[in-house]
Amino acid sequence: MIEAKGLTKRFGRSFAVDELSFTVQPGRVTGFLGPNGAGKSTTMRLVLGLDVPSSGSVTVNGRRYADIDRPLFEVGALLDAGAVHPGRRARDQLTCLAASNGIGPRRVDQVLALVGLDEVAGRRCGALSLGMRQRLGIAGALLGDPSVLLFDVPVNGLDPEGIHWVRGLLRSLAAEGRTIFVSSHLMSEMALTADHLLVIGRGRLLADASVEDFVAAATPASVVVGSPAAGRLAAALVSAGASVESIAPDRLVVGGMGAGAVGEMALRHSVALNELVTSRPSLEEAYLALTGESVEFRSSAGRPPAIAVPAPPAAALAAPTADAPAKPGRVAPTEGGAAAPGP
Amino acid sequence: MSAPEKGGAPAPSRLRAPAGVAQQGHPFFDEVRSEWLKLRTVRSSWITLLVTFAATVGLGALICSIYRYQFDRGRLSLSQLASFDSAFTTVSGVELAQFAIGVIGVVLMTSEYATGTIRASLAAVPRRVRLLTSKALVLAAVSLAVGLAGCFGAFFAGEPILGLPSLRTTLGAPGVLRVVLGGAAYLTLIGLLGLGIGTLLRRTAGAVAAVFGLLLVLPIIVSLLPSPWNVDIHEYLPDQAGASLIRLTVRTGLLAPGWGALLLCGYAAAALVAGGILLVRRDA
Image (cartoon, rainbow over all chains, first blue to last red; front, side, top):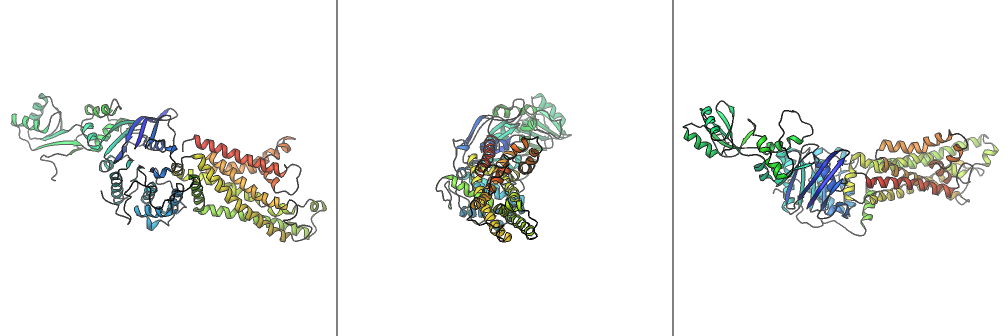
């Protein structure tokens, strides 16, 4: 278990991490999401005692990291797969790390086999691909069979097979009751791997929720309705209090009203329908809406601020509903309807 | 969930210490072993150690040959012969070898920053002073070993080259063993000084430049100072303190060997302590 309380890290006048409080629970994969520069890596360094917090505290299994003797048995971490001496052989890289905590060469061979690197263990690290280095870093984190594991963007540079493998490994490690804390800036990746999400932007906690709750709370469902008489239906829906956006001459996106109610309205006004779909914006969109304001550098300035109050999480999750309506063309149908892809 | 496709071994399935773990004794011993492995498993360490050895023996032999050549042709004056320091001449290669060993000391720490492995190292050994101490211990042992091999090698290679009774000395002669051991100690202390400076500066280029500046440039600057400062300060510089260790007799402008050794220890200790303080205070 990892517990942060009011964790703050200031570099000069800017806050890399700003009053972060969270708990990473054992037995599940906790995804740590945020745009580049949001403070993910700094937070991980703070957890590992590499950086000293400006204020606040963070503990691993109830203790400050710096107070743990032979920490590899308690916490395994992969921070930067590129951090290897290019001239050192892959096995030696692990042997050095293992030796510092009294872990013998047999375990080194075990973890090398576990990550599938046993055949290239004699190669120098400089000759390994980024994907192999990621595996090597993961092997290093597993050396002490620790109950807490931190991974900073572990899928970087991995091929699809490797990504699939990491996903399976993280899930099986969590199933064994370990605490798994994985950072990523890819929501789509976390949606497949994580059970729980911590989202940060500009060092502040934006959301602390399960993946399902995150989507549900961050983005209200909207209804896509297609009709030859879209104009007449729109007028009726608006007068009934729904918000309506026309995305094509014969298609509407309806907010504030369920698919059933929209269907009834159509029946009452004798409007034929050729499509009726409840759509939820993808997880990616929910994430973008939430972090939109906190991105350090944005490609376009046109996007409206997504959230007024970034924390506490409940408020942060509720806020975007008003300001970030589902964008046309990017809605992902998730429930039954004429246009929904067949199962 | 799916087990890893690659590799035969099953995923670790228990939350307990894995097989192959031998937890005995104080963690510090493991940390020292880890540092020894780190040094050993990189080719450049061996190359630089070899350079240290070769510079000590090779340069010594070369200088001995030159003296012998001069002597054979009667080009050495009586006063030169009277002050000829046979033991010093054989081990004088350490004055070149010190740069190689200083670089080893620097790189031992700065390579961790250059490659980024410092984070993994500190995550594995959060007690930072212990990390530095184990590096220092390993470096001291290795450079003492290479220094002893180099200086004894240089002595036993150089004396036969000098060859003639008026140039030769023996290990049993008063002070000669001290000179040979002093050469090894000189190298060891410069190595530790390099480690301290590497820890202070964290960058290889800057730290190597600082070591060279301290050993090479500073003496020149000091010699340009107005009298009597140029002479008074000169003997307290690190390279001169080291030079006193490898002279058979106390010369003007040099400290006595004991004081020189103590001063050089002081320089190395000061660099290591300052580096250690910054290592603890700074974010990794």
